[in-house]
Length: 475
Image (cartoon, rainbow, N blue to C red; front, top):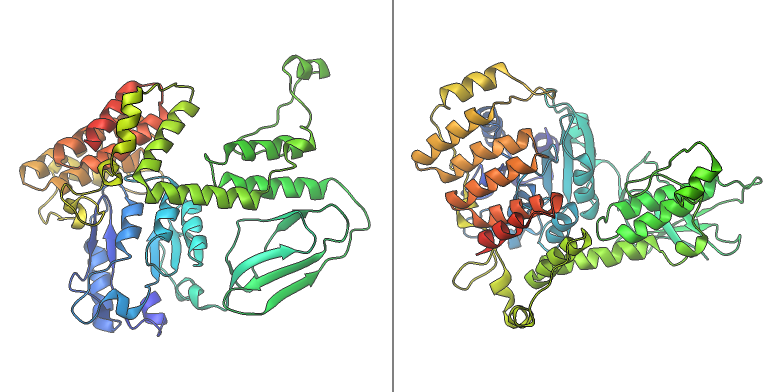
């Protein structure tokens, strides 16, 4: 529907992904015509929905679609991406902030995201679209038809916001920090100021000298609602940068008495109970006086960008996260000197043994989909059992048997895809993630196993085995 309804799309390609990626048209861009659109529909009808989702890899691969001679990506400019997904990143890099920071380093146009299904992570899709000035469409039932109204949302009138300011304000926070505004869109914002004169709102439009200007009247009745509104919006803005923004994020709800991911309200029986547990009704203003949410977000974004660009900073961040969990790491001076002397490429788990550009495991370049039938037991379970979302599910034994059969048939990526289907069913099961990561090493996917072990370590930082396994995966 998107291709048929948008006459501005001259050429296109389709990227399918799970633990790997595969282009539908490996020869390069194809014309936006009825025959090619029919091939897309036919391909989707034959796709096996299985395996965990490496959303990070899919987005990076979408920046470099295959090209034929004379039709290079550089010749057609940045490509817009239409992402249909649940948003559930269950394999590879799973940190929303790192995914977005890495994406901003690549040559990519706008990412228009469409949240399909009742579960997943729509907030990640919103974050990706917002960072690239794309639109986000949510609440699409996986069994419903993708109608023309949804397909044409990206064509509706819109303005891209460069900045939002309020005259004489100390700082300003905008709910969800939108970069794109469309007709009828509701935007909530709040700000702090010393005096009563901060009432002129200015929205600067990207690529234009024009400004949208609005004047606000002072309320005739002053209440604490405005303060709490500022607290709610500020906490929401800061929470998107967790865990790097944790200190600042916690201070805001503690002062403004709002709940969030880092603070909750508690009701005790008497005033003496609050004193007993040293619970303050509200923390003093001095605790948030110097917290400027917009600056915190910029600082965190810069740190995330540093992690993406530098394997050394990424390693330092891992150590910092371990110590933040209460585990002390003592490194010998000789070890510290060795790490400082090592070149960046030696610390990059994605770098090939011999020179060249940073890249992923070459085995991930194709999904190598098996055309044979699935194992009998797996087929039976998938047919009989479904999850709460209506998607097929199978047991550990059934997926393991299928994985082993694919490995014997010579398809290691197929074996990994089958085994990671267990993570798609139970993404929060860290013990299962460790088991799959161990198998991934044996199958020849060390980089993927490193990230899986790192996720286990984040959930269970007190277990030294995870760090040993991370080292083996990096080795």
